[in-house]
Structure formats: C-alpha cells, structure tokens
Amino acid sequence: MPDATSTSPIVRHLHIHGHVQGVWYRASAKAEADRLGLAGWTRNLQDDSVEALVAGPAQAVAEFIAWAHQGPPKARVERIDVSDREAPADTGFHILPDA
Image: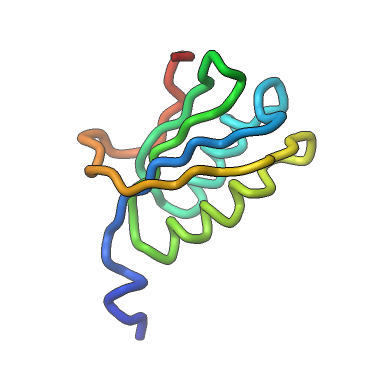
C-alpha cells in the first residue's frame, strides 16, 4: 500500500533551460504527463526555454521531473528550476500557446 506522501497531490512549476525548443519537448512532455495521469500545461518561452506546470500524486510528479531532466532524444537539458505552485483549475495536460 502506498504511503500518504506518494499519493498526496502536489503542484510543481518547472522552468527548463537548454536546447529544448524545436525538439518536440512540449509534445513529449504532454505524452509523459498523460502517461503518468498528471494535470497541467507546458509552453515555449521567448528566451528559448520551456515552462511546465504539473499537478498530481507526489510520486508521479517526481517521475515527471526525473523525465524532464532528459526530455526527448534531441533535447539537451542544462538545468531545471522547480518551485511549488497552486493547483491548476483545469484537468488534463495541455500545450499552451507560446508566451
């Protein structure tokens, strides 16, 4: 039986730096979030980074963050800044327009 910390919902904001645009990072992030049953969104930023918000059970969010450090095959992630956030109002995981 999972403990409460692995099933309690959490929300994390990720700011992903490196060669992460033009490599299917957002589409791959959506596929990974859908696989893990997470809610949230992802989008490109003007500084060539990617931003994501993920919400769900702590274990699934941790798995997404671990995946995000690698990303899709052509990505080169240099660093990820992670912070706590409020839960999104929407359900599901979405690719938002560029910011």
